[in-house]
Amino acid sequence: MIGQFPAPEPYVTKDGSRIRELVHPLLSPGLGMSLAEAVVEAGGRTEAHFHTTFDEIYYCLEGAGVLHVNGQTRPFSPGAYHLMPKGSTHFLTATTTLRLLCVCCPAYTHEETIVL
Image 1 (cartoon, rainbow, N blue to C red):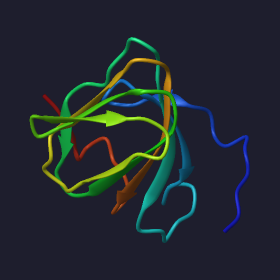
Image 2: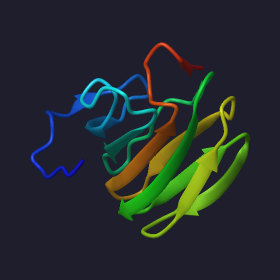
Image 3: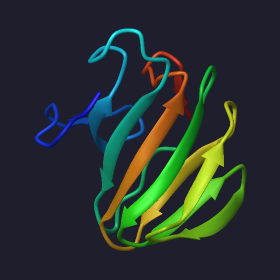
């Protein structure tokens, strides 16, 4: 499977970030994972949340901020990545506009995302 922008229109997901699904079983049936580009505007943050059935990886492409996972914080800037196993409470705060990739395995679903 080869894809290229423009991908489907972005939408605001349950945690408040703006995402564009690049790879998802709804777009390509049979896949067991998803890949999305997410944007969190400067000065913004996502809602604290966790996922009940899937692990998630964040990989920072642009911007700067702080990633909060299970009560711990770490700087989040280009090249940084973090694996959040299912059940891990996490959110991002953006110092400058953040653009990141989100990989979920199995694929992301709103129903399995619990906002705190």
